[in-house]
Length: 407
Image (cartoon, rainbow, N blue to C red; front, side, top):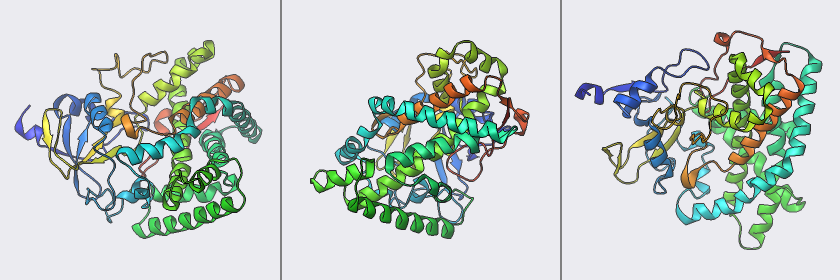
């Protein structure tokens, strides 16, 4: 590799031809420049990792976590936004993100996301998904599967878990978009949305203190009263973070998964012929997703060697999980969508001590939606050519604007 090639700087996010297409640069970067310098929309520089081995190693390293407002990390957005606020809320630092305090926080919250609890929730999720599909069918084709099913199911589920009213979902969606904005909202709009969200959730927590039920927030409040739980600031940040993460990413993934499976009719027909493939098909859709979003960021608080290169303290690193998920060193025929692929060590939920807390919930929702659609709408198909699908732009999370379908 030439010196000029190893020191090239590419613009990030990388260009993609179609909504479901992988950036042409991924394969070249993995093979020629796996530790690459990238220019962010803000003009700041960061380091991009695209190999599975490197991404997994950094995400699994307990020394490093996402940037906070105090780090002076590379900014994402042109107006200086996209720092800590872009990860969820500017109160994210209220949740411990390193070491034993972080693991204590995870232990307290993760009991709500166990496989056993997901099994208990599954019948209710299935009934909700069936109702949403029936309402979509009643409204007539063509319909936007994302709006009718993909968005609403995760919202109803996470609202029920948190004990917040699902009818406020339009406000939640606006606040989530603003807090996940790269370029869609101004810094002032993001700050205003954050303040509104804090006020709303603070009021909700106060109401739960007065009238607790059996939801997650009430349980965390009771734990705190026993002297074992979260501080008020941690409770607020946890509730806000779960509400954003609990519906935004899964809602987008439902739409992308269905679009990927319908983009090649053979995939849909294979699932109709063998519904037992649903679980591995969901994992493969997660791996095959090219449109996950900005990527997980890590701020280096000490020098670290990655891919044979020493990255100095103060470096902002972007881990591209979708690029790592196409790494031929780990996945045979990585550019093919194999619905029976197993094992499937994709990195969509991260890795190590900071891996996604709600991954069992996301997997269950994706499986339930797919099972219900296969059963109730076997003739489902895209209502537009794949080339006409449009990506969500300007947010940290990836998705499709709409998923037009007919049956």
